[in-house]
Length: 308
Image (cartoon, rainbow, N blue to C red; front, side, top):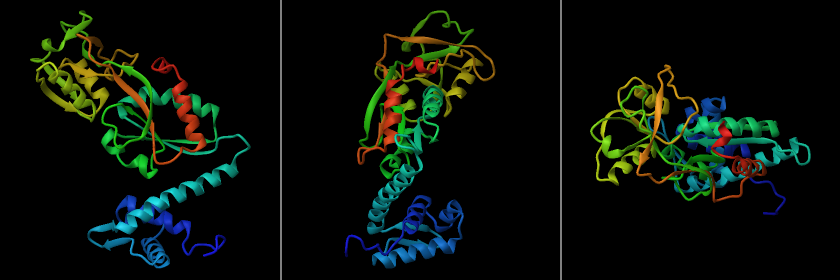
């Protein structure tokens, strides 16, 4: 084939394949793309004919799965589509202007600390960059950086899926949270041995839960878990009501729960190793110019004071 000959498939067909792979069904892809199921099915069939290869196995009751060849085509299609979007974005902006979307992944408990200063200041500096947010725990981020669904993510340094590139933003040691009227509230610090027989409100979202339990395990202790919740503020709310203590990393300026009950932070004695907060991005490809600018901007901020 001559270098100038057009391929026998279209970017539209590739985008339909990628969407169907992400959704797992033709119907799901059709709903997301706002087209009919038959349009998606026809596009997939036309793409398979153009490539002379079976890319998917479609069963009405079981949805859609990729063949080995299909998985390879999807991976390469994501790169082609990303390049096409970059070309389109580059032509929409003035010389030197950053234009286009960035999808930011963020661990939920980091979102209130990391996202506000980042979105406000970077967004103000680059108004034509579209910043989309995906809050997800580390396990749910797995594969999304490599696939191109997420451009950059802000996560704790433990249990980061895959082998992304990374840069450290800041580090904080975990602390204990108790109600303001707890007998320990005025002590300033507390030993984990003093807490082992008390009720723990566990933030049960990886890697936070594993980190909390590892702190006790390192001292030969097993905490008594009363409630498991998946929200940072749910921990603070239950603690504020006196239902137990919590162990958290982020340190909000507000010392009250959603309900207005005051909570107190206590340092852990002896000190525990700090937890790093990293910005990560795919190692498999160079980030777009706007994504690189966001990474550099995040690294330039005076964390964690940037949230103040």
